[in-house]
Amino acid sequence: MTFDHRQFTWTPAYYPLLQCSTHPTTKKIRKTTVKTKSITATGAALLLAACDQMGQAPVETPDLARDAQRIAHSSIVVDTHIDVPYRLEERPDDVSQATESGDFDYPRAAAGGLNAAFMSIYTPAELEADNQSREVAETLIDLVNGIVAKSPEKFALATSTTDVREHFAGGLISLPLGMENGSPIEQDLTNVRHFFDRGIRYITLTHSLSNHISDSSYDDNRQWQGLSDFGKEVVKEMNRVGIMIDVSHVSDDAFWQVMEITKTPVIASHSSARHFTPGFERNMDDEMLEALAKNGGVIQINFGSSFITEAAQQYGSARWDGEKAYVAEHPELEKSDAEQQFKEQYEAEHGPFPFATLDDVLDHFDHVVELAGIDHVGIGSDYDGVGDSLPIGLKDVSTYPALIEGLLERGYSEQDIRKILGENLLRVWDAVAAHAASGN
Image (cartoon, rainbow, N blue to C red; front, side, top):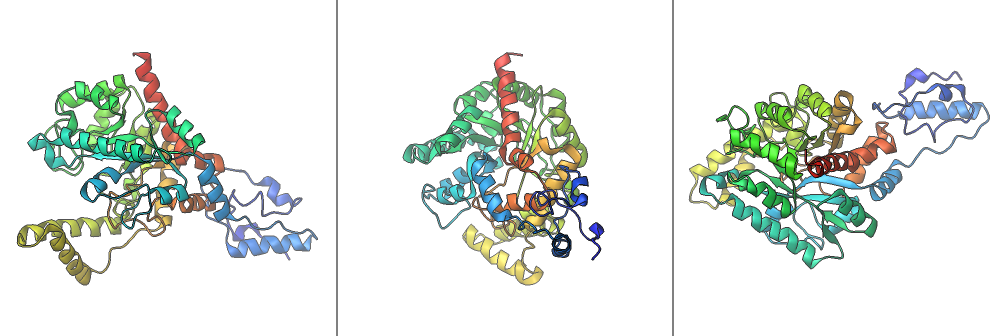
């Protein structure tokens, strides 16, 4: 038979294993970090048949699931946004054991290969008006300290990349801290240092409402047209102290002002690509991704379906708006009961929520790599923070191997996958710490 290589697309992950040792075609294939579609069953059959005609025994096709497990458990896996503290504040649970609720617990994290789970110190935007933000942040930091104190054989606090690497070598899951919403700074610049001393290693400047630091991508009230004057000083102070600047949640104007001011790489701790969700300012557009790469920063992809596909984003936004109105119209009901009633009614009328898929999530990684490069993307899942909106195949912290398998199928090299899993974020963390240590 005649072998026609045009009938399928090569995937670099396959050709070390699925090839004839002397077939001239295989020697001309050029490896690339740009993704390709996985080899088709037809193409594989053609190649195996060609090998057989030449009298050579083909090597078995690779076991990508096995390889994904190996990579997951031999790499440092960093997830920069997991909302465990606020989840436990609302509903106490022992995450050192298997839990029936939530997306994170020790057994699932260990199964998924998670090594550094940034605990989100989240303060709701509404608390700023009542000067309660710092109090809540302190409580949640104490809560994470309590998790570690109760299970020191499983968890450890991490305030540096050295800690993360040592914990990885020792079989512990690191729990570094990221502050989601800068409201706890409470217009006092010394609180930046205070929270650094308490273990905070990134600060998301704002959340769902404009605060005293920055306008929010979710808020129509753009009182600062980006950053406030105080917010600009906060950015400089974070550079001086050694806290990573997180541009998730900020308005576009605020993002560009941060990029003008910062002397260090920045992160988007849990954002995705706006290319797939047109008009959704919470995600980053292509120009911003290119600027992030030039800055040396990294975008950590959010897994929430509403961040991943336009259909989920539109459905989720409409349902959320309707739910808020329904709760307000039914004060006689408990909030949770009203929310459940509305959800059932909405789904009966509009159909079920259109969950994204693993492939949809992988498309975001592909897009960022094609636009910004392999050194500028990582994982910021938003587990325990996006409710029942997680993609099919990525429902909790046990599923990082599924993501890795998908990356292998798309042709990513093992070296590049390790960058995505954690090395990119650790590089930025080191750069921020080094700048602070330099005193510049």
